[in-house]
Image 1 (cartoon, helix red, strand yellow):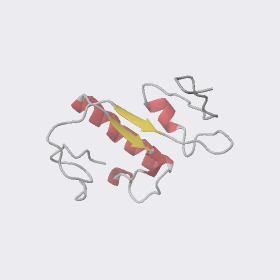
Image 2 (cartoon, rainbow, N blue to C red):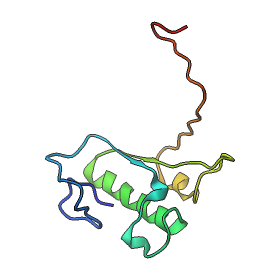
Image 3 (cartoon, helix red, strand yellow):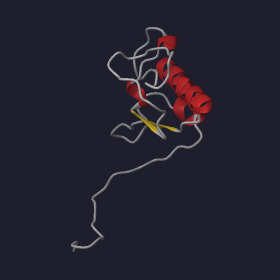
Amino acid sequence: PTLPWEEDGENQSNNAPPLSRAPSLVIIDSIQTMLCDAAGSSAAGGITQVRECVGLFLRLAKSTGVPIILVGHVTKSGDVAGPRTVEHMVDCVLYLEGGSLVGTGRGSG
């Protein structure tokens, strides 16, 4: 993966126009769908692909100073989809669970 403000990169996309400046935040949703040349021909979501892509994004975040949020999904049973490798490579792991939304602002109730 290459961010569009980089001049050189592993997989520079011809579809993404270059940005005039680096963004203040990048969100990757989801890490299990990313492919990285360094991982060879392994399938997206596999341990090799996820590990290499996370490593690439970590190096990119550290070298540019741009925070990168990697979103990983869980299965219906609540397990992390794909390898749990990501949990051991990142600075913070947050588990968000969905539920019904309850309005607390004006007009609710």
